[in-house]
Structure formats: structure tokens, C-alpha cells
Length: 348
Image 1 (cartoon, rainbow, N blue to C red):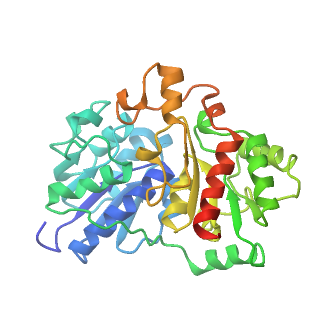
Image 2 (tube, helix red, strand yellow; image 1 turned 180 degrees about the horizontal axis):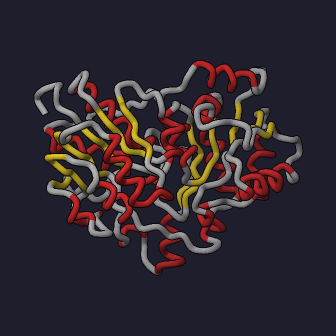
């Protein structure tokens, strides 16, 4: 990897939070080897978010296309072999897809994080370091290349038109904005409309503006409507109105983003907004907002005790506790206390 004529291929298809975690690795690689060709095999949704990232050629793979799509991907890649493939996804489909990417070095996860025959598709592994954040684990993919990720930066490719759109959604009247992105794609990580509404009402009483954002799914629409029905003052409802290019700009306008463990959590963090993360089903120290977890609610240990009969410290790193009603462990008082921590630090 000493020459800028080398080439790399990254494979990370999803999800939005995880592809956001890959961007600092790209920045590390680019800083060490300016001008080095970097190709990234990604899914269509991730591409919508990251398209335009400088110095990266994206190749979208749609899992619905199966083996035919894998063959088409192979035909679309540059001729010859990459110097290295960074295979950053252990799911079986991603492992099979990686076989269609020609590379001399095939760098994958350590054995403790391997599954679905991952080891058959790689010939090198990253170091085994349990107890680190997902972003740091992804960042360690540069280590077999003789590099180290010592700084974390994103600088997402957000066009000015997206910032202009976000700026036009409400007038800046001096009130801080609490933005609520209420839904994760993992429904058991989601909090409850009445509890979101209670924290929103508290914020409104404290002089804040409340904005709701989210995607176009029925779940997100129904959840938003249920929150709105319980608000003392209607929130600005932007659910389903933005694109994935506009979402980062929208999240950047918030002083504080309240959300479960979700893609918007990590996008907001990448854009510099503080995050009130709601964690019971997942460990915030592994998958919470990377830069600042002071305003997260952490009931992961309580969930481990209740549902698995042991403390979180006794669980394998990365264990999910996605049981029905696990998010009941997070109370309204927890949410308000986290909100007030932010107020004390930034507005007192």
C-alpha cells in the first residue's frame, strides 16, 4: 500500500448507521494515500445517503437481484484485481458477494465476530478487540494496511441544495430545536408515542421548538400521528418529506436529536448534533452516538438483568436484547433527565 497506484475495494452494504461508520475509515485511507482509487460496494439506500463522497467510486448492489446481480457487479468493476478488499460485513449474502470481487488481499473480521462462513471468503483478519465501538471496529480495517485510525471525521457529502431545503422548513427564531426521529428499523428498539410526547411537552414548556422527522413507512407515519395527538402544542411534522440527501442537513439544524438506536442517530452525530439516544435493547457503548453519549439513556444493564438473568458485563460484546417491551424500561423521567443534562451543559 505504499504507492498511490494501489486500489482498494470496500464492501459494506447496510445499514445507514453502519455505512456512516465507514466514512471515517475512508477519510483515514485518503489522508494516508491521496489519490488512491477507492471503490465501495454498497446497497441502494446507502448510496442515496453517501453518493458524491469525494474520491470514492460507488457500486450499488440490490440484494433482490441475487446471483445475477452479483455477476453484473463483477462485470462493472475495473479490470484486474484490487490490491485489497475490505470485507466489512459478515452476513452470508455479503460473504458470497465478496467472492465476485477479485482482490489479492481479502481482509475480514476477527474470528469472534465472524459468522455465516465469513472465514472462507477472506485471507486476513483485523485485530480482535472486544469492548470497542462499532465505528472503531470498522476503523481497525486499516491496520492490516499499516495504518491506524487516530482521528475520526465524516464531512458527509451534503449538497448546498439540501442545506437550503432544511433551512426553509422553519424560521430560526432563537428557540433551540428538539428533533424527534422516533423509529428504528428494529421495532423492538422503538420507544412509545406517549413517552416521546411527554418529553416533547416538557421541552416545549422549557421554550424549545419540537420537530418530528422520519421516513415514509406506515410505522413511522402511525407513530408520528400518535405522538402529535398527545402534544400540548403541535410539532412541525416533516416525517416522509425529506430525502436521504436532505436528512443530514435537517438533523444538523437540531440542538438535540431524540431517537432510538437507528441510522438517524449516527447521521446526526456525524453532522455534529447532540443525541439523546434511547438504549435498552442495545449497548450505547457499542452502538450509541460515537462522539458524545452524555445525553443517552442507558437501560441496557437493566435489560440484561431482567431478560437474560445476568449483568451486561457478563454478556458477549454486541449482544442485542430485543425482547418485546424491553423499551418499557426507559421511563419518561429518564428521557426528561437526559434532556435536562443537555440544558445544563449548553443552555444554563
